[in-house]
Length: 398
Image (cartoon, rainbow, N blue to C red; front, side, top):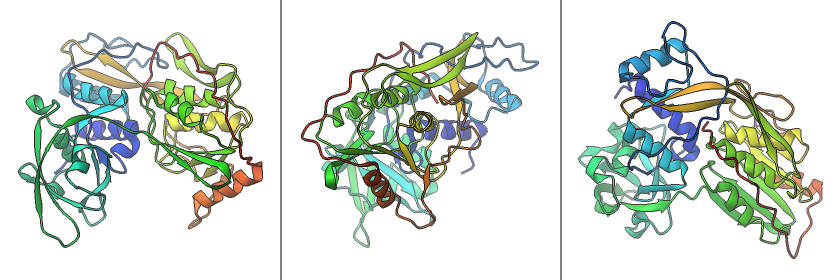
């Protein structure tokens, strides 16, 4: 099935926000009623030449076709048009919750749709679905014949199905075993964007998959456990909310700049509050799937000489998008500028180079631990909780 320009733009935007959720393995997400848009912090306003549109098109009457024409005319690679309900899905996922059955799917080079992850305690786990199972059907259609984004949409539900307790029928098979037909009931689940693992020598590995609402607080909570060094794994993290990424950077910084982005009429500076943890040895793991807000975080810790960045060059998305509610309730999300690291670097188009690159075939995890050992990890019997950073009153989506 060929994607329309609209679907292609939406798929790109969603994959950048949800990272592993839609790119490495699309997770069932949230559908709900239209919510309020975030306030307006963004970057330099874009006034499309010859369109007659204001810099901020909020309240403008635009059809879907007109919106697509506008995005095409301005060359906005990351812009997207959403109906009111589609944007509600998008936004609720950023709140760290989703309505679904608790599984992620991916598609291999052979075109087979497989379960890549099962959320503990969700409907899929209760039904006995496991990572590696093949997803054959979603409702009446073969999963392999649908775009992954469409598989995700059907797992979430549409219209009357977009509520807890609604049913979706799946066919799955494990290995060469028999096909199982399952009726699962959707539930409201946590997106589980932060995973914590205790390694040897007091090392704490914190994996952040995307910057949805509340992620910085989850990182703070993880750091309350005794630890002598931290590996912050941002591989495959394709961004999310700028404020969450900046707040996470502030956990490891004792005040000072985190980054900046241009806002209508000026530049907004992102700063860390005083009191962050400056002592714990820190390594940040990145790769070609580290994008957007995750690049801002890695760049801030790199520029401030707070962490050693290990892995591969990052993706290179340094732009910020602003959503505007149109007259009919739909949302036009447009690129309005770029963000910069504390040293004034923009990763847009080039990405960020690691301090210690992993060579082809090298185990990046093992390399990170060797670098951390060189920084002088030390086992602790306790670790002071970093002070809570004050959150800005607005959210910016990348």
